[in-house]
Image (cartoon, rainbow, N blue to C red):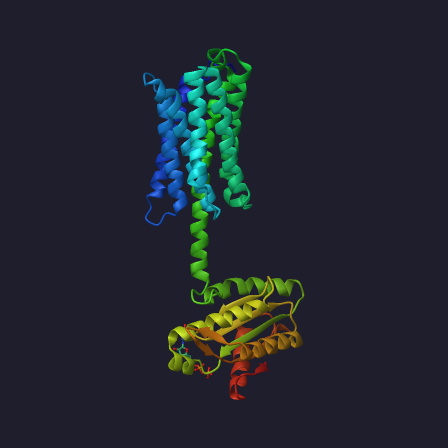
Length: 381
Ligand SMILES: Nc1nc2c(ncn2[C@@H]2O[C@H](COP(=O)(O)OP(=O)(O)OP(=O)(O)O)[C@@H](O)[C@H]2O)c(=O)[nH]1
């Protein structure tokens, strides 16, 4: 295959068209009412890169636009994309850094246009510089670690960096830019750029979709007030925890926890204090949890604790420790200090098998036993 088959002008046109299309895709997704800020930075960055590419490649524009400003605008665009990626990773990129990234491109391009004019130097520098910026983009998301989510975008940025780096290296090894431009390496790198851009556009949209899905999953399985699992979350994760314990031959314990006289707390101090009591209880219980244990809000002031690999005597000890801690601790809110207690029912798969629904209903019965016996106590089912 020779470079003639891959006509460079046609490839360049394809590259510009793909840039405009991926930009349109990112702008359209950023216009979505609830779009996160990173998506808007990606869209703005791509708009800037598109404008920069047009400024650099349209013949007949003034030198200042063609050789200097165009490259600066592309660098500015990549910096905005980098800012978006860092925002996605709960970080940011300051405007000073964005200014420096843009400034370097403008100064170097101005030098090789006005002071020591050299097309070769400009093409070498832009290839290496944009390659480094794209690798910085890849690094920003790769550090986050979730390859399943950001793998496509990382691959796109790396590929784009490699294509641009190859272009720079190729220019460096050819003294005549016109000769270098017609080579196969140049054609292949020009072909790789739009492919990488498509990867990046779909990759970043995938990252945002994953975040939406994660937010939806949290909304649908977590209790908004306490952050504990809700009934749907308990049903989903409880089944898994039960199966895991059963397969591993471990006991599964369930502790039902119900705040005593919660209606009195609400009536005496008001609902916001009642809410704070529920949040406080969830926080305290969470301190007892290990990675595979589950905490769910079962009803108004009733919680379920599912403990994997805990037998009946140990579960009773955990419940007693919790009960004592709840009794001891105080809820502080708006200069108010409120004490509360809780009653608990403890059951274990040793007696009741691994069926979570049966365990919960037996735990509930034990918990009501504790209430009948005077509250602020633990009863075994
Ligand atoms: N603040 C607040 N109150 C809630 C919430 N959900 C349910 N409640 C209230 O919790 C109270 C539960 O009262 P009861 O079922 O009588 O239980 P109790 O007063 O704790 O009595 P015992 O369980 O027998 O000790 C009701 O007054 C509900 O309105 C909530 O999310 N926040």
